[in-house]
Length: 167
Image (tube, rainbow, N blue to C red):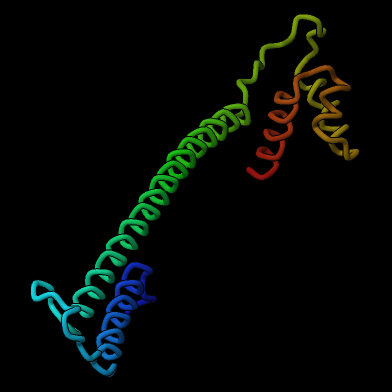
């Protein structure tokens, strides 16, 4: 078999087996002796009446079981569809938040124009001071605070220095 048997199929098989067992039981029983004057000629007599009644009862029970299982399955499908819709909405929300987060983490445009509050020093002197601080092991953030320059500018200056040394 390809997988486990589903509940409706299992119930149908159980119903068929119950029907077959009932037929065997009815066949084994001794036939009641009809009493004179108590049976009407319009009604069928003996095992035929019992088998027909049992078959009808089983048919009704199987139909009711089928309807109940079908209703349960439809309810579960409805709940699952609701969960899928809710999950899709949450995924869209997470994607929006991730995109906002990526936009916030993207590097900002660095203004490398000289700030108006700093005294314009010749580039070699300013670079020399930054180079000395970097050689002493200071981080670009610390250097930026000491020389009162944007961190991006300090990083650019140090990057150009490395490039000149390697090139």
